[in-house]
Image (cartoon, rainbow, N blue to C red; front, side, top):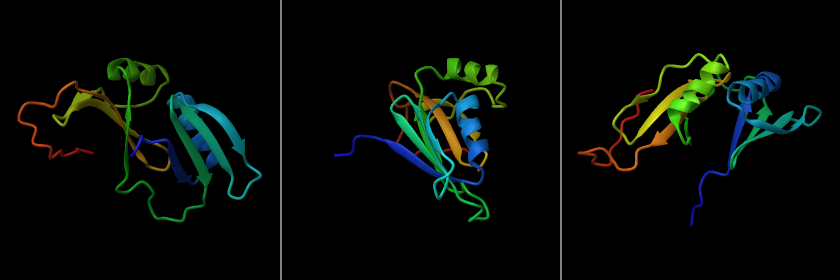
Length: 134
């Protein structure tokens, strides 16, 4: 039985830049940073979600392609205001008809995150086939 997403493990190009982004812009708490390990790594936490970052030099032409992370938030409008207060440039929340209201942004390595407050019920006419506009 699956219990949910416990850990995101992301390879990043610059560990200090990524730690700063997740801590300062998104409000993750830093649990550990080990710059002397190979590869240099950091672990951060937001609620139940643990995020591990490993600095790997540009091993791919463009990271993040085809990968989207959906992270639930209690109130997307309040979360949007917190992002704006942290000077994060992000479009206002919107509804796309696939079951949630969301904002989206990319981290320094172009990983795409959707922060979403899910609707209580599926929209009328929902046939289970969702299209995510990215």
